[in-house]
Amino acid sequence: MASAVDAPAGDGGDGNGNGNGDGKPAKSLEWAQRVGHQRSSLFFYRLVRFLIRLLLFRWLRTRVRGAERLSIEGPVIIAPVHRSNLDAPLIASAGTRRMRALGKRSLFVNPVSAWVCAALGAIPLRRGEADRDAMRAARTILDDGEMMLVFPEGTRQSGPTVAGVFDGMSYLANKTGATIVPVGIAGTEAALPSGARFFRRVPTAIVVGEPIPAPEGRMSRPALAEFSAMVGERLQAAFDEAKGLI
Image 1 (cartoon, rainbow, N blue to C red):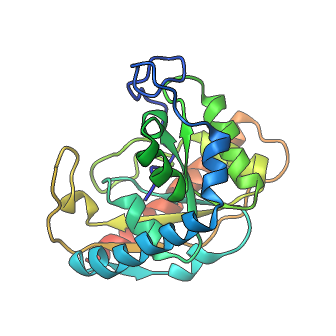
Image 2: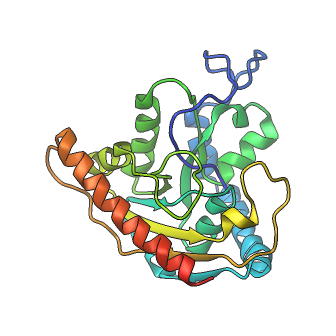
């Protein structure tokens, strides 16, 4: 499935919106949004989700608890721990709604990969520049009442402890009214650690925590930090429960 939002990082672009620095323009956010809403894209997404459930879930013996919480209505931020590139496809395939995400702009240069990414729910982000670009794109998704995958720890982490939750996710929930759903996923780091080319057959588990209503009203920085810390605690609890299932 598509990449998810994480902490700003360079993607090999040239700083001018060209995906890989060789002068080729990447597809626009508007283009990706149009493609993502086409009937053929929705069919492709469901096909990929079916294949992941049929093959990858069985291979990894994935157990899921609380999957119904991935299908709640309205704008939703799915907020999982992040230990492996397997996290996004497994979580996105555990529910019934399509999960949108932000993907690095270089994925939208080649026409084929651009269509695949857009059909799977991603929109291009010029990473390594301003946070406001990510926030604007994310707000577009959530304002449309869609579900979005955001890794609140930022980039991939390692180990059994939540590394901390970025306030950007809390700010996004506050501005859009999106419900936050914490998700613990265990076993994926062993199945496909950072730098690995092939995944191992180890048990995995997903635990979807109780939805957290968006914070209301004007939020100060200390209030955002306090809310983020609470989300981090709920995320750690879901992570611990998932580890207990494998």
